[in-house]
Picture 1 (cartoon, rainbow, N blue to C red):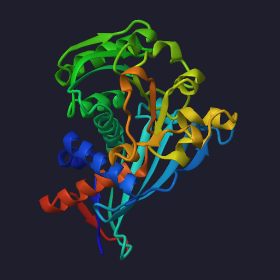
Picture 2 (cartoon, rainbow, N blue to C red; picture 1 turned 135 degrees about the vertical axis):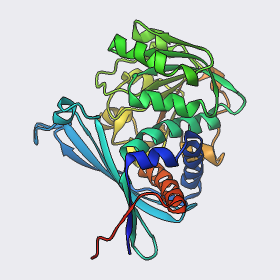
Picture 3 (tube, helix red, strand yellow; picture 1 turned 180 degrees about the vertical axis):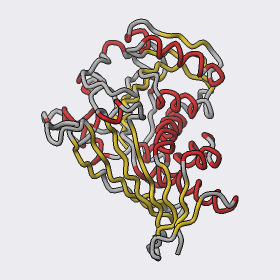
Length: 332
């Protein structure tokens, strides 16, 4: 049995943002009806939040089974803030393995970094479909003008017209470069904000940064705002969470131990009882947000292997049909 090897260049030719958003939608529905299986991430701390080992990095093992594809897989992914950054390489590095769930054959191994960035945007776009069913256009405030700041807007633009995009980055020149590169995805104006508070006056606020200092303040976010805390650390202050009208997550167990909710869970101020619902619940309409205009909603999609495996499954099947990739036999 051979395994299909696919690199980033192959994947870029095989998947579109429209397909990514659709895959995230189907997979969230699978979370809702329990046909998506996704154990919590297993984290290997390589100095990200400890003094040893001294690499300012961590790796996650993220297995999943996707019922609508009958596909099993694993993403092995990490963020490296030390030597990798010094080498001029992207912060995130990842590989994805796909496996036949009945026979256990490894059918594909592929770059996971590009898929990680695409699905991070795709899961936001799919969630916004459930929250803003009656709206066709949105204003968006974005913190972080890096790769995932781009993929957020690329994916959302597949579902909504973006009537205004406000972007803030601690490196001002990066934000202006972002503005020029993203014009084709935004129907309205792109405004580079000189201070962070300016970007919060929008329908949707998204943070995709490495911040750990809770720089986004509760008083910045008005009723009617949906805030997506996408980072793995503490981008918002505690009051953003404690005074939110609803907390929505992608994976309850995982979100209680990683990302924006983690520190409040440790302090005993947030428990599972404080979570309104999951995105999967919204996807199958088990739960709804009825009073969005008058509420502050915080959404914490910390990221699941299921989204990566689902997108990788689409890539694999398209590669087979087009005879792309390289076959390799590990068992010879």
